[in-house]
Image (cartoon, rainbow, N blue to C red; front, side):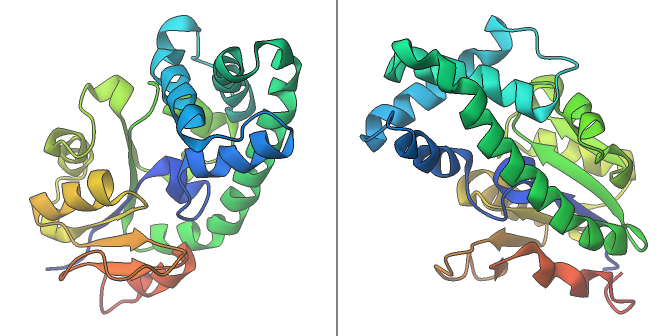
Amino acid sequence: MTLKAVLFDFGGTLDSNGVPWPQRFFPIYRDLGVASDWDLFLRAFYRSDDELPTRHRLPGLDLHRTIELQVAGVLEVLAPSRLDLAPEVARRFSADSRARFAANLPLLKTLRGRVRLGIVANFYGTLDGILRAEGLWDHFDAVADSGVVGKIKPDAGIFRHVLDQFAVEPAQAFMVGDSLSRDIRGAEALGMPHAWVDPAGQGPCCAAGRSIRALEELADLAQPSLA
């Protein structure tokens, strides 16, 4: 079938080329002398992540300020006397994300010249505002944020939230994400073509999908024979 849409995950995909947030954060904390035990860090990370939308007023915040609040929640567990480190952790993380946004813009512009682009993300309900603040909003035609939609990947409902807006069938769309369990298995269950962003080159995601080391490898999706 004719390719009509490309859907992207956000965190771990558009902002870091296949490296999930915990794996990006951990070296920063460790470098600042805070985290040394991975399991303890992971528990603190997900506790802060889960509580963030209920503890703070997030709408209107850019990526840096959102991350700073998330980091503060982690530090409350790991190093309550070092809450002063939150701005520096957030600065490093946000700077890396923004560099990746800039690197991805040529691909997004190329793809959007031929297909519709969407984002399907498990997020805090504030992704629209972050995309606007980071200058990314105009590059996408639809956004499904789990905190708004009320469905979490790999639930089919969050993918269909965008597919229905585009009036396309799953087979006419292409999903790109870094999580096998959420992005790839969710797309696979819908019969949607997909690519797993796997910078480590661990191998194919599945029999029918692609595995790529970098988003730039998707440039062929903009070719006339595919779009």
